Length: 168
Image (cartoon, rainbow, N blue to C red):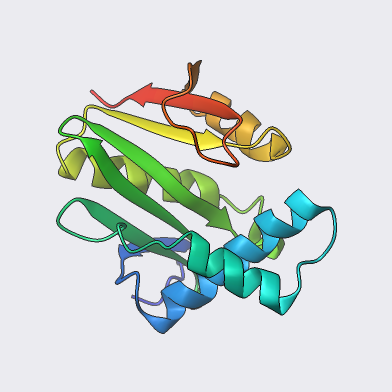
């Protein structure tokens, strides 16, 4: 599939991909670069980025209890999302990301729909996530997408606000 519609303009496509693939590693590194840079209030160094990748692996975003989704805008890798089971009926959304230059083109909605479908495919009846208060665009997106704020369900070092959405 080329990712182009009849008008010739690129469209978003999302497919499951191995979280260990080179494309997955590159998009996850871009995600961590952005969120770490925002956390520090400055661009992260290569050493800090390497440490962040090592300290927060994505290995559990793989079958049988997880999935990693790679989004393309046309032929360009443009974003990702991961899903993993927390329990038999609860999934967690991780690593939701769209490259900055592609934001506003519908990628977030396409990715979230694919992540919710993946969670349902894993047997989940609800999906949760945690994020940081400085990621205001993400918080607004999740609220618009039907997520409701819930009490903390984890103690992640960067978790500051928690959300949940029913999938059934």
